[in-house]
Length: 480
Ligand code: ADP
Ligand code: GLC
Image (cartoon, rainbow, N blue to C red):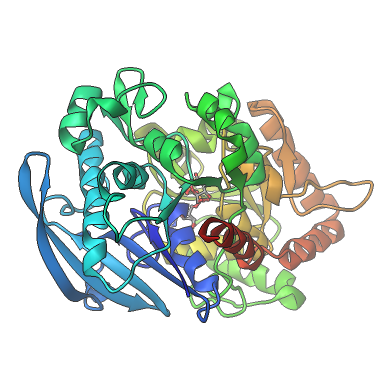
């Protein structure tokens, strides 16, 4: 039996702010249980839904010296959908209404988590062969393992994998404070280890010390070796190019299945998608109180509202887009300027724009099911799951060709009749606008072509199986 421990700050269904949670919550289900025991360790946030908290069972607790104090570490366990979870509890670090708060506090919080995970392991009846770390929040696990845990018999030979879901966030803080909090010595504060500028950097630590590095698409694996996408770590990415590979994300085909989805008004499959998507569109127009009309080109956006996702391009073109016969349905939260922009246009064009500035799992599914197209003009996109969900629901993505968007959306070609969506190359507002209008023209003037594209989109396979096999190969290779 091979034992893998996923370490993450979020996982569906316990906590989700973005795609990281979808990936960590769904990938472990895809391994053959007779050969792989894949578990997940994450914080027990106070804001986890009460019903889910009821599934957790106290396992043990201990005290750990951390940042100058002896601190409580509770360990709880739960099983959900056949996957075993381990929760690290500490009320002062994991309280509050959201998993992430102030930057400095988050850095300290996840340093604590990383140390607590390793300290808890010998008390569990599970010794992982591999700890698979996800994003900056778990970046110190490979470092601590190297530093103060590897010596003991229990930890000897445990391998680590670091997966980059987003290189932009690195978990850095002033090096003196970083050393004081993490307990790591000056030895680590050099540029070939954790130091970056004046700061200690958690993700860099993970990337230096992990045995293997992955990221969530082939294109992003290439992009992060360049200065533009490298976020200051492109040199390290080039230096570790042999240990770095892209494995594209999948989505949970049980959760995101238009045929069985309890969140949508009218369920469908490829054979009745045209009619049923229309029914869903009518229902959503009614629910959101925007104008009715079967032939209005309805574009969906479900996203964190951050610069990463290309909202400055949309802001620049919003006025023009709203002059056309289109509808925009937005669901998202994030930076104030983007929230305000969508609220403003929803106020000016109430028939055309619906700005839903909150988080809602059910509404997100309704948008994937009801819209004609899905807009995602990202500045950078490690993988992107929303476009995969859209494809699955026959909603054609309009994307910028970057990272995972380039790898998963095949642009429409009028001459060969191929494609599953629409794309543009340069990060340019007019290019985006023209691509949206091109999609609009195909929808209006060549509906047959549009409908064929819908069929092709729905026939794509972005379930986890192929990618889970690649992870499996990597694990096998590491374990030897
Ligand atoms: P990222 O991880 O960069 O945010 P992804 O496309 O990988 O982007 O994943 C985003 C995930 O979060 C998708 O499952 C999407 O449906 C979901 N999501 C984003 N914003 C919201 C929201 N306001 N309400 C519901 N789901 C959301
Ligand atoms: C990150 C990326 C997104 C990716 C997700 C899951 O949040 O922004 O592109 O799909 O992680 O890997």
